[in-house]
Length: 365
Ligand code: PLP
Image: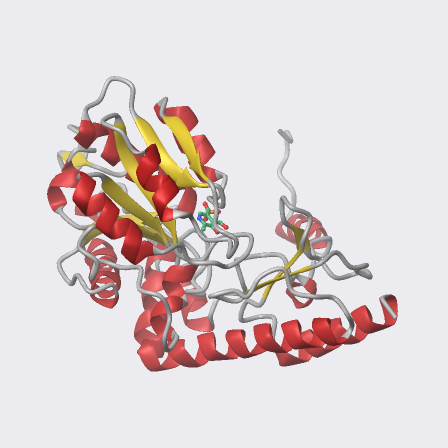
């Protein structure tokens, strides 16, 4: 490190010059994160120094984390759900599988996961030494429930379903999967990292939550469609006993046990997540989601007008297409099958969609 520190002015001139190298959100069509809502930023700044890793020192902030869990539990039809704020979908998925493995107590446990699952499950299986059984998808890109049922055996500790897949924005048949999990007595985790902040605010959306008795846990990420600051995920669990299976002793803290994966945890982004929910309410969230879906359909219509067909008809605001030439400076992504993938996050407003379509029209004419 430097022997003598920089002046504040030179330091920030250096830091901000690096920030200028980042891509402007106005051109980011590939990300499931977005510009945080102003109330999330304000809350984040107010709670910057809070640490949920030692909740007895920050009882006020800890009570706001509990309120966030309560609000989401209620949204998912289980007001008494327990859980905690994670760093995002990856941590929530790791912890859900860890919990399922502890509860099952098998020597050679396996998990049954759709082909469309996020790569965080690969990390989870690797860390937890779980055999990952991959379930094929039906032609509509949703997990095949019959194939899933066939893969379950006495060593299966968990089945996973996705509400809003990362690549194609599809929701697995969670109702059927919940029935299978209930009948076979298997822990059923729903990864709603993306869809959890979209589907509850859409009319006629598929059911994916605790109203289905077989659903054991849900991952949802406020730092995606919840417009919080980063990092903010939440893991929700049907019963406290499951969560307690993760408890370790923490003798030198203000609390004597914790079930989280991280020790030190930011309060700032967690309060940011709650702030958005409290400020917008369900009504405000419905407006945001309706706007994103409208833009998604406009994008699909516009691309198809240029002869670039959709790859899927999504349940959430992820649009996928046959390959096309993409002019700079647009940042898009590509699925494993080679489809063009665009995510209509709140920062991708109607003007951005029109300007993208204009550029695509010129490039692909
Ligand atoms: N699950 C799903 C469905 C996702 O789409 C993502 C990220 O895009 C994750 C999990 C991982 O979330 P994170 O990047 O916040 O760890």
